Image (cartoon, rainbow, N blue to C red; front, side, top):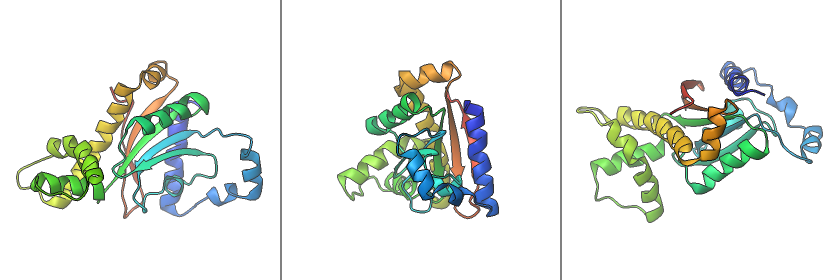
Length: 204
């Protein structure tokens, strides 16, 4: 599947999810499990937030073996996550990465709270998440902006920054993108409507 076809398939799945016309139940049966036991060939990778309300398989109406999913708080990229994305691209035939954030993100909220109160501390591990999201927080700071607006703006900006980091930090993926064999897209999920807004694709 070519990258553009993979993106179209992903977004068609989201449209079915929004409309309530789900089909993935037809692709999670015992026969499908047996078929996949010998190997996998996902058409897309999704780097998403660990938030329990943002399961990619549901959001994109995907069955078993169709999505390669990496999730953590704030949909951030580190060495392990980047290696996982590279593996999907180079070993499973996956031609698309969707970096997906969402509104009312708790990780973005923690980062905004830290910007308002730099002395606050919860744990070293949570602070590491906050530190990684601070560039998005600072890029979206506006006078008079309330926390809900700032949090959503941070989450959106963070998606674009992470997508850019993937390309900048992976020569393997950069080469695949330049050859037209791989695409990186950015999406923003709305918790209320269920719709994924496409923000960008193929970041510099």
